[in-house]
Length: 186
Image (cartoon, rainbow, N blue to C red; front, side, top):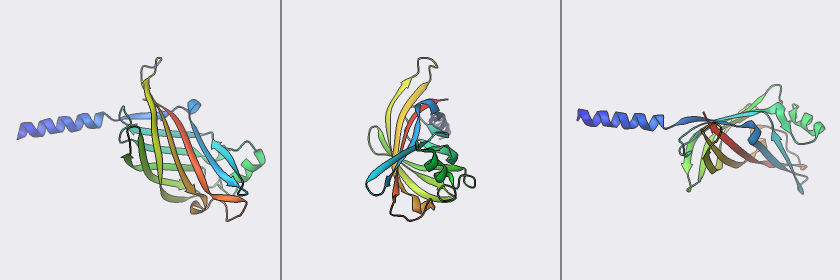
């Protein structure tokens, strides 16, 4: 019995140690979004200042993600619109400088696909959201000899659920999120 407990403890320790920290490569990652304008077109944008960390195995099974996005880094290729989005009318960037996401559950849905559910906090409001994820590939980097992973996370959030902007016919309520990631194992 004692020998069985020791083997179990060693196996449990090996499973825990199989998880490692991964960090997003800002030069090869993008946190993007799209929203309908005037019910006829789509405006795209991104946030240029963000940190994304994951704890995951070498195959990205059962990953846990933490996302930190600076609201002041919003970029829609229009300075006036970006300043308006930073204002109290939308993100209130001075009062709410970050958007955060912390995953709670990871559900494998296919060989390379998964669902990631967690708490998204934006504009001081926290809601549970689910993102669809895909592992595009995992390689050993020739320079560092460490693993790198390419991933994509996608989902839709209702901006009104978070108090971002008001009800208006000129702007859609649903915001499509697309996060393309290159992550480096630490």
